Length: 425
Image 1 (cartoon, helix red, strand yellow):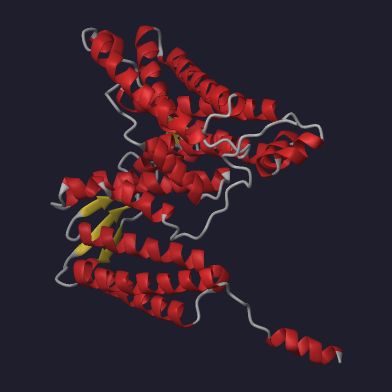
Image 2 (cartoon, helix red, strand yellow; image 1 turned 45 degrees about the vertical axis):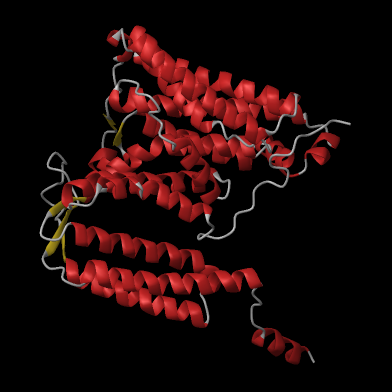
C-alpha cells in the first residue's frame, strides 16, 4: 500500500495556475520574437569583430588581462538560435521554478548580442561601462531603498522623486556656501524634512498616501526650479560645489575587471553598499526589522502585541527620507557639482520600479536599480559607437522600467497593509 502511494506521489506533476500558464506562454512568444529581432537587426549583414576591453590602461594587471574579441555576426546568429530553442521549450513544457533564471540569462544574451552589433569593427570598454552602470545606479538604488524601508511599514512613498530633487538642490547650495560634507548632511536633512511632512499627512491625518507623494513631488519641482532661477542664476558661486572624488580601496581596486568597477568609486557607491547590507540585516535579523515587517503585514495584530505602529511608521518614513535626500546629493556632489532644473529626471519613479523588481527586499531593489543604471550607461556609450537617434537611446531606462512594472519578471506581492491608513482602536 505504501509503495503504491509513493509511486503515485513520484508520478505526480506540478500543477500550474492559469496565471503561470499564461505567463509561460507569453514568455515563449517573447523569446521567439526576440530571436527574430536579433536575427534581423543584429545578425544579417553584420561583419567584423567586436573587441571588449576588460581592463583600463591604468589598471595594475592590465597587461595580463586580455581583451575579449568576438565575431559580431556569429554571436548574433548563435543568440538567435538559443532564443528560438528556449522559446519553443517554454511554449511546450516551460521551465517551472527556473523561469526567472532563464529569463535573466536570455536578456543577458540579447544585451550581449546588441553590444556586439554596436561595437562591430570597433573597440569598446566593457569595464568602463560597467563602472558607469554602478555610478548611475546609485541614486536609483538609494531611492529604491527608501521605498523599501517605507513600504515595509505599509507607507507608500511616491515622494522619492521630490526627496531626490530636494537633496540635490540643498546639497549643491550648502556645499557651495560651506563645503561638500556639510552639503551632504544638509541633503539628508532635507529628505528627512520632506518625509516628516509625508508622515504627518499620511499617518496622523490619514490623507491618501499617493496624493500626498504627488503633491510633494510637484511642490519640490516648482520650488527648486524657482530658487535655481532666482537665487543660483544671478549668483553662480552658490551653484559650484566641489564633487567628491573616487576613492580606490587598496588591494581590492587591483582585482582584475571587478576591482575598477566596484572598488574605485566615490563615497556614494560605498554608502550604497553599507546601507544595503545594514538594511538587509536590520529587516531580517533584528527586533526592529521583525516589528517593521509585522506592521506592514498586519498592523492591528502588531499593535495588540505592544508594537507602537504610529511611532514605527514615523521612524521608518523619516529614515527613508534621509536615504533619499542623501541619494539626491549624488546628482550634484557626486557627479556634476551644480544643480540644474529637474536634475533627477524621474529617477525616483524608476527607484520605485526597482523596488517592485526586487520584491521589497533591499538586495533585490539594488540589483534592479543597477539594471536600470546599466541601461542608462549603455545609452551614453552607444551614442559614441553607432549613429542611433539620441531620442531612442534616451528611452532605454524608461523602457526597462515599463517592462518591469508590466510584470514580465513575475508578479510581486507588496506588504499586505501597504498604503492602508491605521486607526488605533
